[in-house]
Image (cartoon, rainbow, N blue to C red; front, side):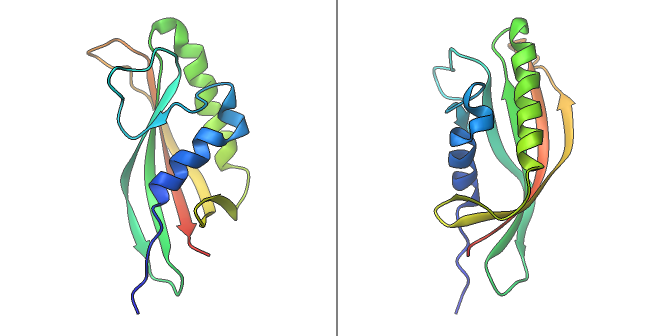
Length: 138
């Protein structure tokens, strides 16, 4: 019998879009790619998996390193971008065994770094938060 892993990234995106800590900040503006046309409201978040993979376990378990790019559209959005980063850090410190959606359970999460990385082409403010997430299918 082979293990079937959940689509942890899709569940994470849904979880972040609906989370109350982000509701007044990025809200539903959590994407895998910056949409075309770009959002007209900031801040917004772009997610991508930057590493990790399956762990040896009797239940499907993934450990993912996820980058969260938090974007603004102009320099005046920088405060909102920082507030969104703080909300992400708080969210990931809230504990374990959190149902993210479609059966994916966030077992453990920790922010491993954050860096100020404004986009050199557009001039848009951007902070990047890396987090290590361990997720399972119950």
